[in-house]
Amino acid sequence: MSSASVKDLVQIVAALPRELQEQVLEYLREYVADLQDEQQWEASFHQTQSALVAAARRAKQDRAMGKSKPMDFERFFC
Image 1 (tube, rainbow, N blue to C red):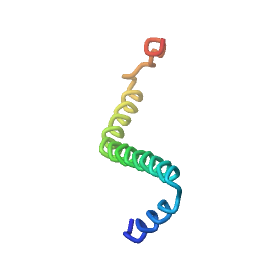
Image 2: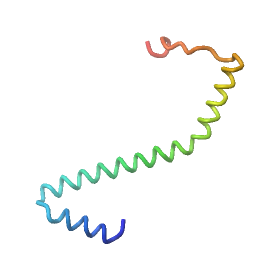
Image 3: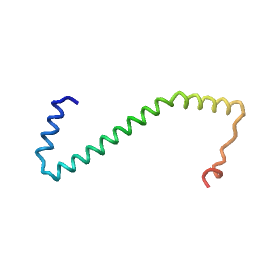
Image 4: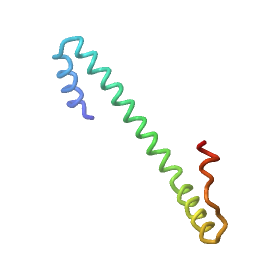
């Protein structure tokens, strides 16, 4: 964000009553925290993506070779 954009944002918020300024600030804090969480998720996903692809390929090969068996969902979910 350019310094001009930051100045614009400050002017917009400064023109609001104090109570609304606090609401905007809290909203921005939550919004930025969500963006940071999303960035962390994306980074984590990209770091593990090749391992996930390799695991999926192994599972597909095992299934094709008859080395797999159906999952017992009751064992895990009951």
